[in-house]
Image 1 (tube, rainbow, N blue to C red):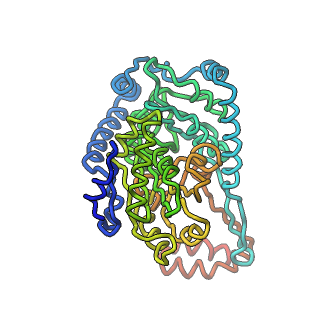
Image 2: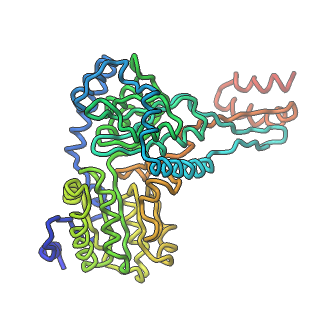
Length: 452
């Protein structure tokens, strides 16, 4: 069945693209959801914003806050008073506070396990190099706002930094139209242990944190997700500041076996598509019939969800169902599915497959931000409370970046100690190599000590 017939078979309101894998190259899979003209436009805008913040500091930040957020206040008002943070914590429903505290405990437990141990080893008799670790001094975390508020992101960004031992954590988040920060975001910050919060958002917030202004401190690293402008600002300022990864609009790839429930798969793609109109939701299915069933289930589901307008926009713009043309019993299934996964390098990878197929496929997966195994492990578990981090590389960057983790906030410092005998044992090797490189000062450092 070709694409035209598939489109005719779908009589629903939302048109989700369906592509045969045989009709699209692996190189096209990632570009299938990238609008390069939009990327170029965003880059130009963000470069202007960064330039203005660099030149005019607070004045530019406040100007962009008026322009983009519709909020006007003075520089001292950018920082949220601690009394407002305390009031926010007291105003939030007790059940929500309890859920945030439970999530925080799991996130802390998982990320504490990631913390590297210091160690020492003897490489040559009497020579004992070691590794010590130190936390970054100041970290900025960005928490998105606008269409939705994400208290979970506060925990995901702050808790690993706290586990790492970061001394100062600065949070930036966009204000509401009334100039205040959503109370649940402030409450989550309090639960996480953050009290230095600035109500600024967008690319101007990233620029302020990376460069520093009269009011906003310059930080060593910036972590946290955001829209295309936030992600672009982080990428352009990398080098002046450490970033976690280019974490932009949310995306998911659901690999659904022939026995996967189309209603659950529809929920899995809609759960990410509902973030915003730029979100990317993809599914890899085994057959044309499964593709049509999934498209129908998605169309039936969308009207029942609160964010139906955003869902319709994101699914029609970036929704994609790929037909593999092989069922999971086919001996080539795992290799071909892995090729698709690794080419896309999705932020979230949901493997809605039986255990045997997962066991075969998982070792072949090289590129994914986070992986969720089986229909009982939907992505929202990791989004909120399983303990893993939901700040993940997007737009194919899982090929070279990892999920946000404790080591993002830690420096590794090598240390060398040698005894007199150790120096003698290693001197000839060092002297030979140093003199070959014509660095006699290096050679003399060891030779003179040994001779003396």
